[in-house]
Length: 132
Ligand code: NI
Image (tube, rainbow, N blue to C red; front, side):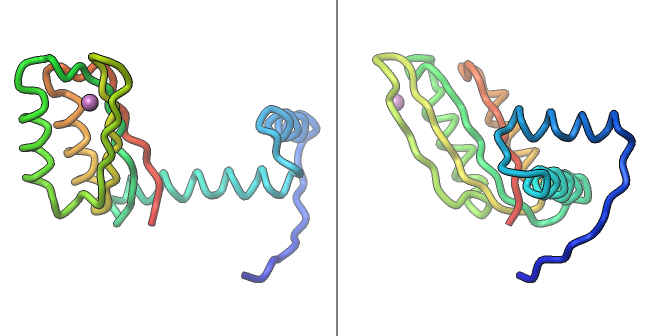
C-alpha cells in the first residue's frame, strides 16, 4: 500500500489533545494515532450502514445454570451461517468463557449477539465489532 503525505492545520488545543491521545495509547507517532482514528471511524461506519462485517461475541456464564448450555447450543445452530468458530474455556469450577467469532451483515450480527447476551444465566456479554 502506498503512503501519501499531507499537511494538517489544527488549533493548538486540538494538537495538544492529539498528543495526549498518542501518549495515552502508546502510539509511536501522530500518523499511527490518526490511522487508528480513521480505522475506528471506518469500522463504525460499516456497522451503521449494515455492511458485511466481522466480530466476536464474548460471554461469561455459569454452566450450572439450568438450560444455559443447551440454549447456547440451539441459538448457535440456528445461526450457523453467521458463526465462523467458537472457543469454550472453563475458567473455574462454575465459570465458562466463550468466544464466538462471527461474520455477516451488521444487523444480523447485532441481533445474534443480543439474543445470546440476553440468555438467562449469562453474567457478562459483549460484542466486539470489527471489519472484514
Ligand atoms: Ni465450561
